Length: 498
Image (cartoon, rainbow, N blue to C red; front, side, top):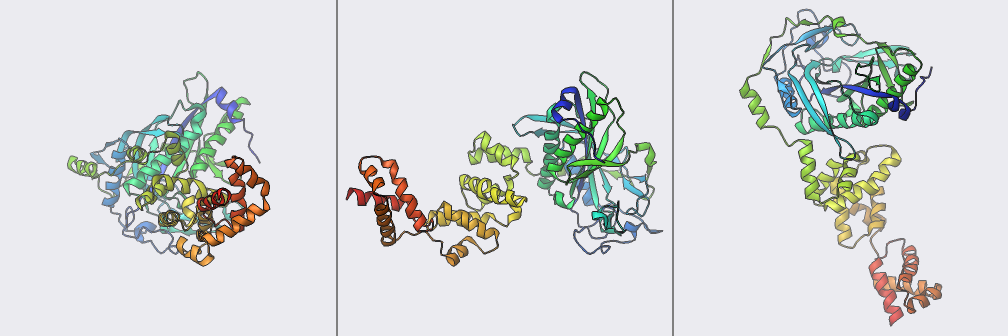
């Protein structure tokens, strides 16, 4: 059953969106949050588990100190206060992939609280998002559904993989976000991207959204223009791509508006995002904190963080993404528009690595934002997934600099790199793509072009120098685009003026 939605423009003209985000970040510690089992991705099901992860009788948890330090590190990066004393609690609910029947988390005593993050939108506008808390917890396992297109509804049976059970998480919870207006979906995307970039820079998570290392629960509610009371919220769970977060918020705004316009009430519930239809469907009524019956975990001692620990972690913080962007913008000499395009294309890392490998900033931008982005868009994947590396770009630039290939041939070479045919140098040699610069071959091609186009030759003789291009084209065609265009032009003029 499809949901009725109001056009986004109409919805934000009548209502003010109120947002809230809960971003879950899987930490890249070697072991799990409360056990010595390996914290690894992609291993065979149920191989990275022990008695603590399964909640077996008598098994006692122990806090992963590295995960606590990661919590401090992220809290400082988000301008939070760090708790001098905090505890873990048991959050009670039943789900098949949480065999203890409770999740060990932090309720009213998080490791970090009262922070903020300044988020830059696509046009350079900065929007401050207030952070309520960042708390430590463990992940649940994973249900694998067979049949029913991989979803629980319609599946024939489900199997439980406990490898993820107990993986360390930090959950970052914002305060209600008001004032975004028609930029609410854009802000949602930019905020989660900023969190992803920060945890990557801090080296506390692999931050691969396609693996679920960073997942977002997006809360949306609407209130009529001029009102000061928040509406009823819905929570779209576990959205794990930037485009999906933006689309989910946009959809929910339209859905809420349709309900309110009809004089009905929004149900407080969790929703599931469907990338194929770009829509959400109802999950379950949303529980309030009281429903989870939080209680302090009697098996875990409180965490005490002294000032010396905080000071050491603060001193070791790396350059933050916002500072890095400012430095690179200046160093590369891009215009504001060019740099924003790089950021919006999510290609900052690739270009930075390519410049570090030896390419000029202009060349790195040209190839990543041009041919590589075009090929990636055609395959509907990220440019970094094509298999083109910074070293490949540097090699292509060296081949161009040595006049062994030109830009047109370079584009062909990149396509062959994507196809897995080898390095640029190997491809040029194997396919015979080197620029034709031999004067004998070029002179023959020029003479044939002049003989076939006497009118063009006459125009050049009459002083219309722009007509030279009409002769260069046939020469390039005759040499399969491999002629040295500059030398071709010289030979044409020598022939005409000789």
